[in-house]
Image 1 (tube, one colour):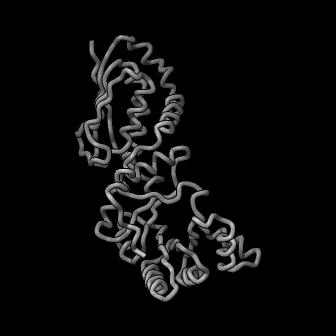
Image 2 (cartoon, rainbow, N blue to C red; image 1 turned 45 degrees about the vertical axis):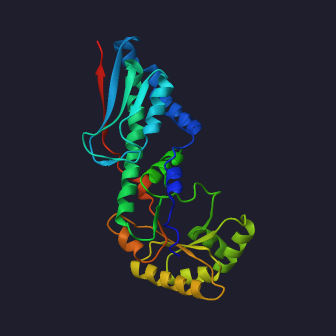
Image 3 (cartoon, one colour; image 1 turned 135 degrees about the horizontal axis):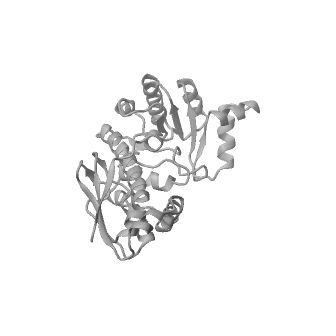
Length: 309
């Protein structure tokens, strides 16, 4: 337990790397097509092809900046001749009035790409901001803050990237990345006469040997049963603080016995900024928070445009 929160500087650099460029281009193209950016009737009617201008992204609220490379890709897709210059680093904390980036060149593609670029930048910065607040709340404790699969369909890679920019870590990317036995899987097993141990045995026999077996539990007795059944990870779902402490103490005793194996404890469900530190202090290794991606408010950002005559 509690070995999950350490990370090297090389790991942090990797975490800050933007998503695959080809994926970003596909997502940007889909968003531009959805917005009709190349069929912008207003801009076509009012802005000449030779008119130039510049736009500056300005923070209206305080938060962590994430998504600058994606916003840059929006304008590059519309007109490669546009000049893009970031004015803050990805992951920096912006205050109201801070300038984040500048785009300059032909005015029409700046206006046509404005909303899509802002949508990406505001959404990803909001996720990074929410994540950073939770990470800061547990500072000094050996615990990691994780996201979940509760993401916007199609945007999971970008939203998970924003979590990393905010200092958090990623849970499994999709259903093929990890074996997580949830309550409905256990119910399906019980319908066939299987105990928790039987379900864990079937899972271990049916998934690659490289994957950990995680079991969702909601009470101390279930955690005890799952641990005895050979689970590698216990997902403590909506448990009280006192029950989480009991499970952590049990896991520590188990690991200290001869032949005992390391067990990872994940807390999830009902975690908020107000209680995340108390949850971390129970002795869990990781805390997964769906709200980082499904409920993070967008960071307020505007694009101030100046047109040349």
